[in-house]
Image (cartoon, rainbow, N blue to C red):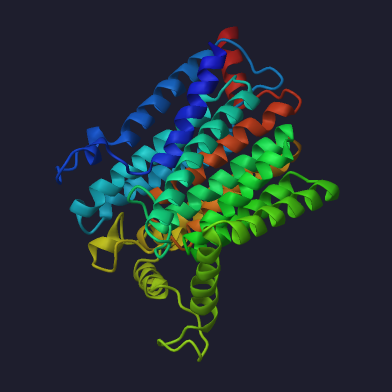
Length: 418
């Protein structure tokens, strides 16, 4: 039963990270009306909620043993207050028509993030993480094959993306693919297999032309190397194999020309030389993000304490979303919302520092990947996996440490004594 729960939890958590807003009605012809009950994410969250109830029931019968996960009470408390405040901000939203759909997404993210923290109780940490990363690598590996096939079939002229998702989304998924490969490399070796796979994920992210995605992958990989305390000898071997794999792809595959073009056009000309349509004058091209950032910041200054309310940014006609997690929280939740988000970050950093010897490098790297990516792409729901990854990392970190009585254990023991 324990093996089944670990596998199911890893599977559901991975699907939650990967599925996004995909719905079964996309399989139908035409343009059917949106139906929340046909969205995969709803059923994923319901599965996570069911496992959370099982985790609570299981935890009530015994304390935690070595190598088993335990509840991170400070992080869970911070997350609960933060999500609760975001839900409450719907009360002063300027337009309920915009606020209600976003409230639904905030509730889904909150239930899933907190639910994973409860569902993982008393489980073998290694089994949960292995199941999670197995599904992530398998799913993103298939998406990588689909993406390459579509890219080559289209002549290699467009930015790489799959299944109707944007290039930024695909870049983030390829970052997860690369970190998943690094997870299995650190866990079981086989450098000849996992390092080329990780390098492939990075190269496919470059093909998307997403500069924010590329920066996020760099940050995620650097976090993996730092947290994993990779020895210099292994790091040199990793760099060598990644370089060889990259050179082989550029020299001997049809992707080489496309990679060179993407690097030149998206990463060099646009980022370093673009200004007012003239690539010779210098400047930086931000795809219009600077306008959205300025609008979000100005809206936050207009309502500095509690923000303008949930989904105020699109409701006031300022854009679909600010493309920055912190600015989105600031303009809609004010300084109070930012403070609560900061509380979540500090609670996780405290947990990570205290359990640094047991941290899983790939999971931390994935959290860093999503955090950096959310500063230039996507809305709050697109950053949902940041909170789940923090919970998953914190709950599994303490498993390798000496058994310590959590607050939940103390409460359960006290109830049993009475």
